[in-house]
Image 1 (cartoon, rainbow, N blue to C red):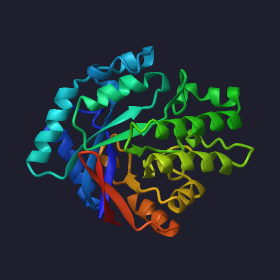
Image 2: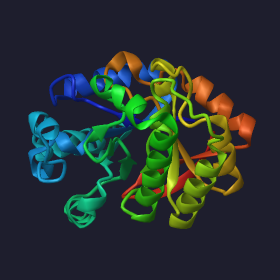
Image 3: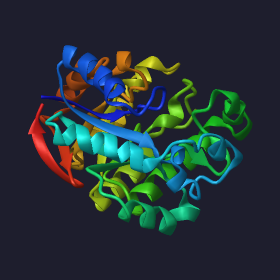
Image 4: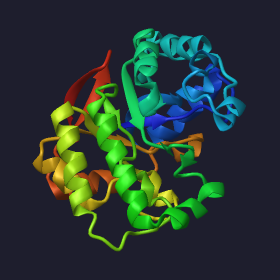
Amino acid sequence: MLVDYHLHLERGPLTRAWLEEFLEQGRRRGVAEFGFSEHAYRFRQAGHLLNTPWGRQRCVADLEEYLGLLSAAREAGLPVRVGVEMDYLPEREEAIRAFLKSYRWDFVLGSVHWLGDWGVDLADMREEHRRRGVDRAWREYFGMLGRAAGSRLFDVLAHPDLIKIFGDTPAADPAPLWDEAVAQIAAAGCAVEVSSAGLRRPVGEIYPAVGFLERCRRSLIPVTTASDAHTPEEVGQDLDRVVLLLRQVGYREVLRFRERVGVPTPL
């Protein structure tokens, strides 16, 4: 059973017709359950969390409208799950916790996009990779990923090695960084997303790297599958390659979520 637990409606209206375009394309690729996970920073109700010029510029949507659309779709029998993608911001942990508790979610994705004021996946900030040095950037990123897991705010960590997005690789072996992060993820009981989105980025590979995923498997960390689609055309894209990789490293199940409880489902 294919599930796609990372979908964004942000490039179109919050309407049933736009949502059903995502479902139609996903069904063509065998997707049976769709997890929508809009970025929290887009919602005015979360504007106090990523309170930066970049975040404020994009804080344009209403969360109640989003939740209403997804809830109505689910009540109509569509295979939709209600999620959100939340940036981990260590200085905002308690505010994030309060925000998440104020609404009913099926699942919450946690993402590390920011190291201070550096957006690690933003093309117009790419030079920061070189300024800091790739080794330092990777150390900081995986340290933050471990903190995100340890916060226990999230059900799933999205694109867990996003720092590789532009294809920069450290001179040092990343294995110790992976080991530490995976230990923290396992201790927190968090799942990890395996995403085809990296295949559409300069790095040209699935998130996370095989070595990272093998460590997750050995530590019995559960997984979800995702395309990180921002358009209908991307829904379910390359999930066949994701499933192949999961099987190669020994996974036979993925998690499906309802009201923040994950249920193992055969691949």
